Length: 336
Image (cartoon, helix red, strand yellow):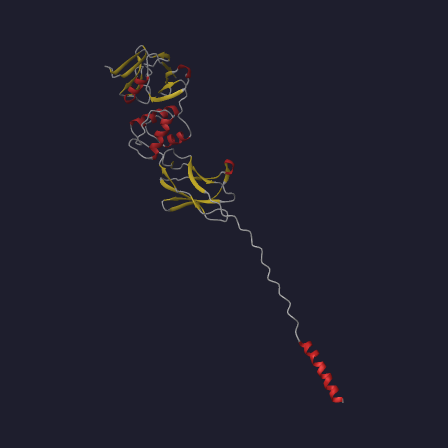
């Protein structure tokens, strides 16, 4: 009887033991967390760069004088805050200067401007290159290179090039009678002589460095004294020049030679009363008489000083244009 009971007990215990050894069902693993994507940065801005010259010689081709400091003006359009550029200055293939530029907003932020001083002590052709390397805020941008002719501050008969063109442009703007050929000819020399007289410089037909610097400083302006006289002439004996004037506007300025000390030119206010075209027996060309035998006329010899017998001599190449401009009754002022 004992053995069956023991067997029964063992049979009952086996399922419980087996149940105790069965592992529990696995706990489900949660899916990995999806990271929040970083915000997409805004696209880099685009802008254009350009470079120009301030304070150089005027003209279609940028130019400057040796030793003259001019300003490279760089524009970023539109303006992009906190973005700069690099300016490189070359003479031929040689790099002379490198400058990091910072822009200042102008015109309400529609553009940015940066400036840099440049000069050359020798005649040369300079090239200015401006660029911006790509940053998160601005794409790569490159300005069109600017080439500048640095020329010697001197010109005389036969000279050509930017310096002569500059002289002729400035002389014409100041109403001195000059050619615009780009060649330093007789008309240019006569205009330089007249400009030197008005500006108070030594009287020669050559454009030396002081002439260029004087023009850059705005010297040589003829100041009208009698704007109420309509079309009239103002002759300045101390300066040895005369000007054709319409009201307050100077139209033309000429180199002249008045009467020498022994035969001085009469002073005062006169009117043209007679005109004689052509050349007379005394060598007077296209004469405009304003009192007795005193006239404005062309003559072969017109020195830088007063040398006439009392008339106002002008160079023969200028005589016809003065003759055609003056009319009977026009006022002629002769003053110190």
